[in-house]
Image (tube, rainbow, N blue to C red):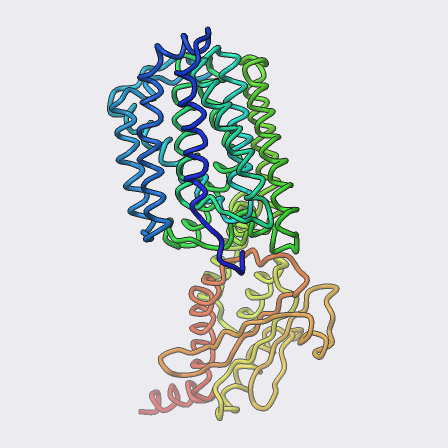
Length: 491
């Protein structure tokens, strides 16, 4: 977004700010520091891996590396965190209670959580002050939960992190004079993820599962959307793009400040809901999750993602229109069967008319018969007319012409060319052309609820074979069979 060179090692400022504040604590002697002195192992469990993540991010800021290397690096550092004792070893599932996780599952859950949240903050760091502001709200949530759970180490680290981020945000908000960089985004992401693991161990069901997810609500939603979009679009999952939530809001013409402030409000809303969970109890958990999910789906739907629009259309086709689409396809199949039994032109076009009664098309016309064989075409037309005097067929330039209009549709050909789209089916068999068939659909109408593959394959094939069969009968003059029989009797 920026046009001038801006420092991008803001992570170092955050790191040394936190480290300096925490390093002062051993110099003080009070009830808090006495309590923290027995928690040095937990402190090292958090800050040793966080320091390694900071170094990985700083290397990327200075020398550059790709997404795979960063994912692998954070994964290995998360393994160090797990080895030091930081792990998700149980899940408290609503209605089922606590579930102990086998070592392998516990390891996978811990690694996926740490790597996912760490990179979620890195992914949203595409706008001045966005990642740091989101991290501030997440830190406040962890602080509130830690106070309610009486976790002194988590309270102190969360307080220090809030102070560091608040001080940094003054220079990171638009127009930014320094960026977090990968060093800062990965550092605060990993630190918050690690704190959420340790701070919610042995907590209640709501706190242990839903509070960490809601605390990182906006980064989680944005990351999940990015991965889902890329998967649906067939793009590499780790390939960057300019379609994150903040990009979509900027595309609406919003300023960077407005986007940041609106998304701060989203983070604050997630944070407030997260802090409400421990107080509401399990009875309202399901209802609150439902409301949150609906709100997120509605909000994302208004961002005009192509992938979301296509999924929505796909759901409508699958659920809402499926029955009608199946019925229309069955009608096409039945028409193909009727065409295979048609003995004259009238029966052939009557089968087509019955199919068109499903209402998907507004107009159709056809021209059948071989070019340059007007006499044969006329004999077939006259034979059909004798059997069906009221048939709606006519001869034009030596070929049989037919048309059909949906009731209430505009008959003007000039209007039709402006208000409808059409597709043509060439009637060709064994290299011989037997005419064409056009279907018209209104531009203002609903989506076409019939499989066009059925029309272009099954239906077109049977219609062409019916035309070829009917015209072939009239290649020999009608008097020829009687003449042959008379000559045979005379002989």
